[in-house]
Amino acid sequence: MESSASPGILMRAHSGATYRFDPGALCLELLTTGGPGEFRRYEVLHTPGDLAAWAERSRLTPTPELVVTGGEVADARRLRDALFRVTTARALGETPDPADLDIVNEAAAHPPLAPAVGPDGGRRWAGGADGTGLLATVARDAVELLTGPFAHRIRICASDNCRLIYVDTSRPGRRRWCAMEHCGNLHKVRTLRARRAEEG
Image 1: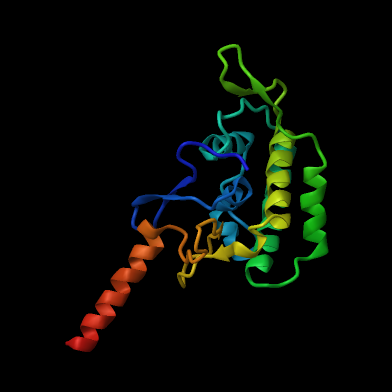
Image 2 (image 1 turned 120 degrees about the vertical axis):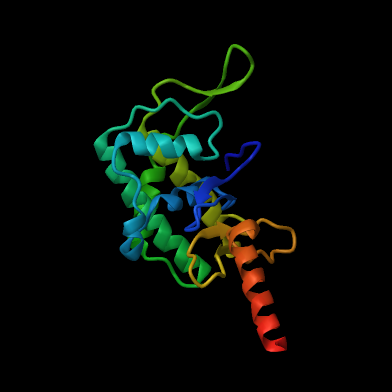
């Protein structure tokens, strides 16, 4: 899975505060752009520039210089929604819909972004990076996650009003929150207030 010095996506809470959400995998970062059903109201992938902007925020390092079409944006939403349903099913211990797995596998079958070594010795992406290659990279990351040693650690944030999905890569495997500085802290505050109310 791709990684960077500071993995994760910057998120904005309802309060306006920002926090970093590290879902542990590139494919799960795509789920922060919206989703199926009730999550459609969070949709941010409307134009080719939106998909390129997501790639810039993602853990892909360095950011690929993408040429994205409107059709590839629609493909991104289709892949994301399938990934949303598949990873939710895994987190709940349910069997994913084969049609959703077909969407993931179809995207993964395309050539992914090709890494290369630049003249300065740094990492870069080979020319011709497009939306289809980006989605193939995301889909292959999903295949790696869903068939790898952390597949049983795909989780949904334990907060009642948060549905962010992550993979728990911690050594003890007891992560409960999308981010300690967000839902984890909110839970601590609620618990403390409830305790004080009982004591009062």
